[in-house]
Image 1 (cartoon, helix red, strand yellow):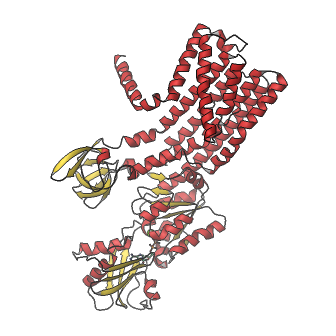
Image 2: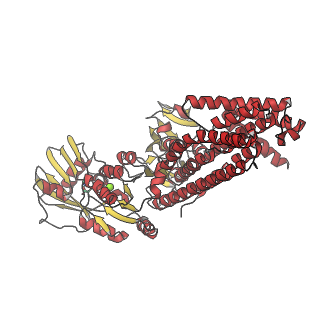
Image 3: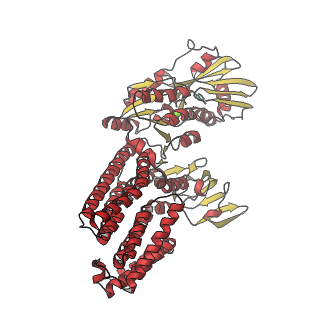
Length: 633
Ligand code: ADP
Ligand code: MG
């Protein structure tokens, strides 16, 4: 027992600490004060609470509770009207005012306090639903060791600046997004990417705020701090989800404007027909869209929280709704279905150059390109200890290749058709390297080399395609690479629908074509050249690690660990979320209809009406909260 009590006390302190701000809000204080008064009133005069008979609840504590709670409700209703937000506060305000005017003080007190307590509970549950946020918050250290000048200093988290060198010791959480400059460590990234196995980090590797260095120490140069970090963005998206409205929600909002006048008219008719002011007051209380308004955002917030905890960023609530209707998923190849870390397979000089010459020229031209193949060229050169000089001039040709001036030469490097466009057809020279991704290099307007790469499919790609097919979702491969390569990869993964040698704008057309046929399309991509298609698709999905900033910004969903199998989880989650929303709406509409019928039949009174009204939100919130716990299959 003793231990339990101790834990209780500690829990109580932690609770008060965490919710201090919430507890000190005026609304909370008014609610608690009026609730205490009401309890006192009931203790003093229990009969007053149940009997709505005239004058029965006219004791001072009832009147005080009624006035304090009602005035607060009126106050927030008036504020709502000022902000053109015609909430359910209006009919409820009229109801409590009418009850007080009619001398039904105890009924007014019970109803007003119940509604305030209900509202408080809802806010409290919402704060708890933000538990995902709390969990994310706890991923950051309070103090951070930065190396400014010769000395290491401990500074508060919010004092860390971009460019700071941050020291992370074994077992410590990483506080910033950045690049490793020194040291090696196994980093547990589960909180951000959902990867269960720690990832080895060495100089040059990116690290995320909120991940944990398990073994080994790291020095990191901070590139993003605070709210800019991936973790900060996840937090913001989970928090924003509540504000944002899915299309379902917007329809409801339009109706919500109608509720207030309808409630008032219904109450007036009921009063005229029955002569019972109590029934009219009950109608004002039960005819309220509150629960229906909760139906959608609670489910969306829970789903976005679930996605975040499983390593996917879903930026908006509406995206969940769009994902639920997706029936076709189009994939980019390089960097999306494949690992995006192509390795050099062969260099074939055409023009008397050595392999070293070819790599030195190609790597210099590619040095500033973001494309996975460009990285592979630079890696191949560095592996052979070939110096990679900066180009004098560089131009990216998205989806085609690059042009550059370097080492005294004019270079054109990229897909074979790029050279063909410049009148350099080399298809009859040397091997074709069928099935391997091949790029060609021209030096000073002359074909100079062919370079071939292996690019293996991601290990989970085939299973993901199969899982999508199993739930009836069509897949297609849309790539800028050569047909032979595309065919080989598609064959390995079981994709029938292949479009190869596609230019960036034609990737968007590929999406549009399918949309014109009535399909709902998700596009999964990583590159700059995928931007138009990601924007055009009903749902754009970017690869989090291999993805370029442009892809990540354009897409509505990011797979933080580049794990394609998360896609299957996300689509399933979206279906469940929409089902939960439908259930919530049907349930709340059902309760409303029943409550109105019982009110007309004069079975419900203000007090029972308020109870029914408040209690009916619990199943809705609980149903939505289930979504948080759904695990990936
Ligand atoms: P995918 O659609 O499969 O991701 P991309 O559209 O990005 O492929 O690229 C299509 C083709 O264009 C690549 O297979 C490659 O041949 C060529 N390419 C694009 N960018 C570059 C680059 N920076 N260097 C060399 N080749 C490039
Ligand atoms: Mg790509």
